[in-house]
Structures are given as structure tokens and as C-alpha cells.
Image (cartoon, rainbow, N blue to C red; front, top):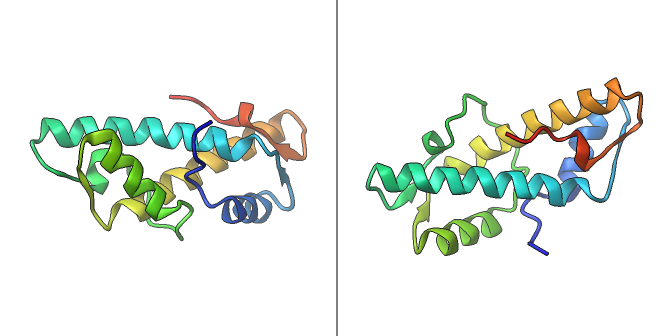
Length: 128
């Protein structure tokens, strides 16, 4: 099983606040981490195409704004360094990825509400 990249307590708090009290299933954070890893892999490819050694916020092809850190920075940097054979991670990546995470959580909340559930689950995450 892969390491969880997101800060679980902050994800649960974000969902509870944004949804007016919904719960978060235990399988949600690992599934969210899997989506983030896939986004990181794509960002590494973008960085490689640009012949750079530092992954930046622009490599995520996202227009999401900055948010409180919803990701474990050290684990994110370690994942990118290991997966890319040594690339660095720019400081502006964490806020960008946190914005992406917030958007994914918002979509998951909407999906759970549409199914009339009070718990956000892994199946509520839309995969790209």
C-alpha cells in the first residue's frame, strides 16, 4: 500500500466545513493520494519535456488558487524526487496541489450529496 500524501485531519476538516457536517470514509484519503500521485507523474512528464530539473506549479496544468496545505510536503517532495530520478519541487507546488485537492474534495462532496449520503467515499472522487 502506498503512503498517504494528504493531511488526513485537514481533509476531514475541509470536507466537514464545506459540506455542513459530512463525514469522510477511511478509504477516501488513500484514493485521493492516488489521484495526486497521478497528477505528480504528469507534472514530472511536463517538467521533463521542458528540460527542467524542478517541478513547478505550472506543470500541473491547473488554474486552482492557493489554499492551506492539504498535502504532506515532505512526502510530496520525496515522491517527486524518487519518481523523477532526482527532480526538485518548487515552493509554489504545495499551494497549487492543495488547490487541486480542495477542488477534488468539493466534487466528491457534491457526488455524495447527489447520492443522498452523509459520508464522502473514495467512489465520490472523479478520476481524470
